[in-house]
Image 1: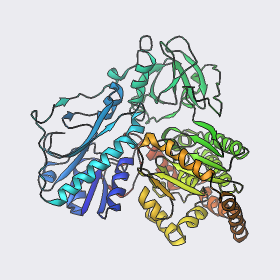
Image 2: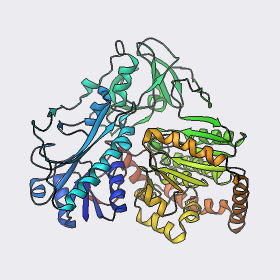
Image 3: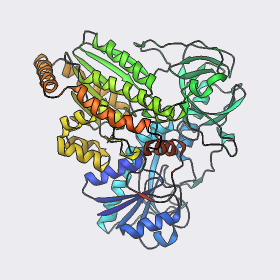
Image 4: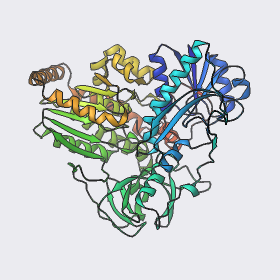
Length: 572
């Protein structure tokens, strides 16, 4: 079947549904549409058999939905009406939620139901939920709806008061989201922060200035006067509640009238000179299991396996984050283990360099250069590890240089719901992170070139067919870490592991003799240097447009950008 996906952004859910439809033999086109006229143009151009809107901020015009079947993905159960459905699910602490695929009509959210799938809501942020449990349910619901539509005999179920309870939920305003630091306990604060972690954030007064707070994590030891800033850690700030404290990784200044668009940054960087003299409280790399605190990098061991886990907001890795992760990786390489598992957390694996930190730098070109080199150093360390096996455990999405980090490992184990985007073409940048070595090594020269030129995301199954992934694990997001630990334990106990490690070392030596890794890096970085240090290179305008969300609203066909719900990508 020929399906047109029309969305307000080529975000993770749109990419996920696109890859799943293609994996099942459907032909697809994608239109990023900012208004009704853009929707009309896209439908007229592609004349699809079916239109699906995974995430659309505008309405589908009546002349479109009355002429052909248009299915809308609503991130709520049947009967749920209104915006911010996932926000409310997180804020209200619901345990069960759902995704509905209904037919577009003149009344928003009221169309006949083609399918719906329930899911369990874990205590995570909205963005994490969107990319994982909600995305799994949405994908299942869309595929079911497509099968039913293709059958030609299915009659969708009307949404009526007799069929289910209709609930009209108003927009979740900042007044409703606001945290009362003098009264709210930690659990209440976390629900508010997590319901707005990616967008729009929770508007608050901090050190006399208005900021949006993004993300929230529990802190089990630090205490202080409610609302007081207590400490910093890895760019985040810790703030006291009535019965404890929370870590807030990112802040966004409120935009002033007529001023430039603002964007999320690590909290310490966003506060800048406003930040008082606070202690930097480092979490131990080997965090005890009983601790309930936030850290973005941790290490643990189980017999012959070392687990280096990391989780950065939005999947982006700044210069400092790359360097800290490299130091942790070198620590793991000095431990008495035969297998290192890199990753293994739910949600993002990595999405490359940190565009927002680069954009905020006094010299963006210089910072982009430093960030790219720091990421290259990390990838090189993985590539040159020859005395043990390295497994990349990709529990969520991986893109650009972050995908190269995963592909540098000896084996890539991927959750079935993950999406890989091993390219940087939307930024007009050639790409680095040893892409010219890593991709051909796995996919072959011709296929690697096609992956970069076509700039199309791959689902887990497609990535495996392309040779980029070795194992696809069909597990729920919350079960991914447990399954990774089990499989890694089996790998670490394999009788033939020493022979595999010896063969790996020999293969690396042969490759180095044919062409040194330094030659790949030099060629890649020469192209990148020209982009970063040429003021009128398109890279700078494209980066600024993505970070500041100034792209034109007209329909764009194909993967023009890759944004999370109501946010922008952090890395590339």
